Length: 448
Ligand code: SF4
Figure 1: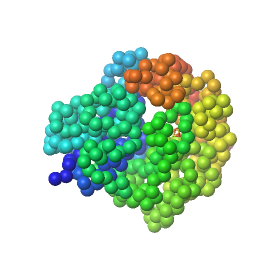
Figure 2: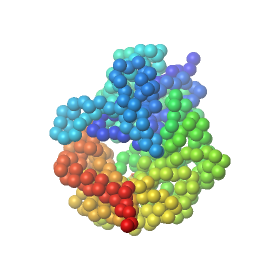
Figure 3: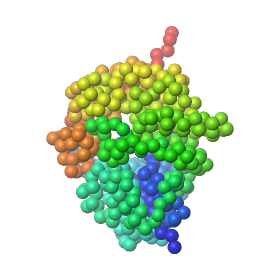
Figure 4: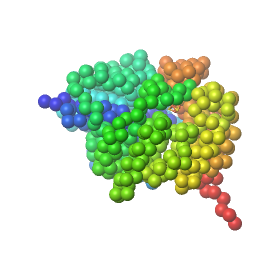
């Protein structure tokens, strides 16, 4: 008999969360490699297409259908409930919430299904661990014999903390061999992610590569995923076809270095997609993980647009040369200017190009954030302040131990840290300024 595996994507405990094409891609990819060799069930607390929203789940809370509504690119709000701030975040003057399907729904799900042999739980942000804890408690109670497996960023970055959560097995980093041994199944590494586990799918995820060749001092990617490794094109194209077949209208790329070595990785993929587009396949692509402006050439911009890329997010962080040098020299101001120009000339409007800039970085004194925001705005593109999260094990994250206790993952919270470092008023002032600048892009002044 095939082993039975439940896949769980936990609820989020945070001040803010938004469905920016969030899918538990690491877990779905691991499960895909076991396709046909195990029986799968999926419970995704963050699935906005779940029957809960149409009132068919049997849970007494009346869901507000507004949480099912998506914007034109398939993003939207999660169902959420206001809860008390955890004691260590009491002083943060913002409402703490639980985002995702009600806990009661998961308990009913466990009761109404025969126990599985394994429960895989995805973890993402380190400070979202209370959602993981909640899943473990409920599984232990309902299915005491099930083996609980945790994998993902939180367990990799905070292993000793995760070891205390009462799971049976932790998958650290990207190495899956120990997992295959633990479940006793030989994987098929050519298989795409297990997208068919969703009863209904409108948004999906693809990755052309893993890891990143850069080493920015504030980023967890080099630690969690290591160096840059492209995935075989054929495998990516199979996964793309599967997503299209299942009904995905929007696909987000989770690559951390989507444009690196574009000649051998992205461009061949784009050319294939353009061929399929000419035969009628119509999918919107998005790049929520920051693109490196340095690699946006005229050719890349034109091919991306022709293949169906609709939203472009670019990492910039600061216009200060001193800050750029100190944190890894990922991208310089002139490179951002060129990239914005290439994209705009390829037909992308400024409102669909967003430049990320870090808010609350510990070297904020040399970041000259306000000047950087105005610089990005002068290029006719939107800005988005990306709240800084002190990631343990990174040079900049560890430096923050002078302000927060990094042993408590809740203190890595990205809404909290800028407020702790810069104060509530300054944080709000900069966010207001960003909103004001963005209005000039979304509603440009009309010529009289
Ligand atoms: S911030 Fe981006 S470029 Fe820098 S190491 Fe992380 S993923 Fe790579």
